[in-house]
Image (tube, rainbow, N blue to C red; front, side, top):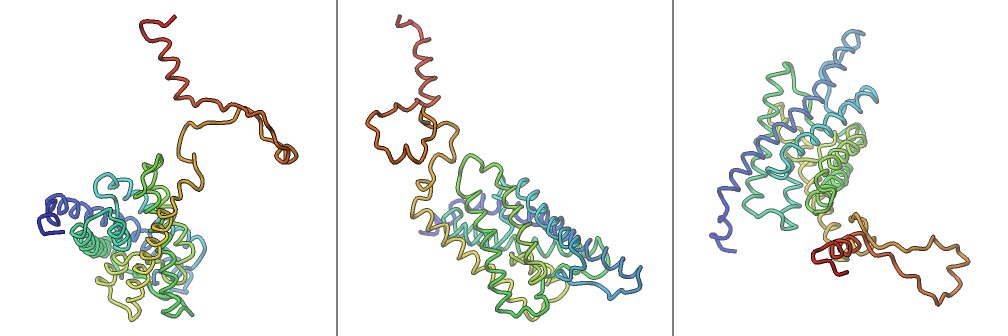
Length: 305
């Protein structure tokens, strides 16, 4: 690949990266704003009861309701942002997803670098906007929970990120009849992963989402976990996706992505009938597409009869 091929579409790459920057801001203002609101609400309730201990970290969840609120904020935030920008930039918003898309050949290296830069800068801008809008300390930076060591944190982040990246690859990168609804599945994946990960790692799952708040509010000694874990998760999801493509997964369970297919005329056989050999083959019903073609042929002018 020479420089002319590599930078042949640089104008569109730059424009897509600029819009990816905007989309990342939209996603993180909604998602991180919900986390900040949950922490503020918990702080206010604690102050009213006289047990206030100041601002909480992203994984200091006081109740199951707060956990659901944080998870819904991130999941719905990603769902909305991806649905808005899916036809514009692909709605990536995550360097781990960008890495996977590069490895499977969906984006070129130049767009990969520009996307990663746009996501990181967009996360910083979104965090700064939240700090200015909400007032008080920004408490959306993920950190390891109690009794969670860095190795556990890396593997939790790796597995959770792999689930999210695999959802993107199978629902969005892999084209099918329900691709238009991929944002729903991707948002629900992030929501469900947060239900598990918030208490243990803060559910970073995105180096940009972890890096932006850290730039604004300060880095912790375990910040590297939120780079290594998502990167390994991206590789794991890409490897699984490549394996499925290698074994031609669509042949393992066929006719799952079509509206019309050939069905037998007979009812399902009983176990005894399955063991009894039959010599009379039952003709298969032609599909609707062939039936319509035959009808159109008969109605065509001049009429054959």
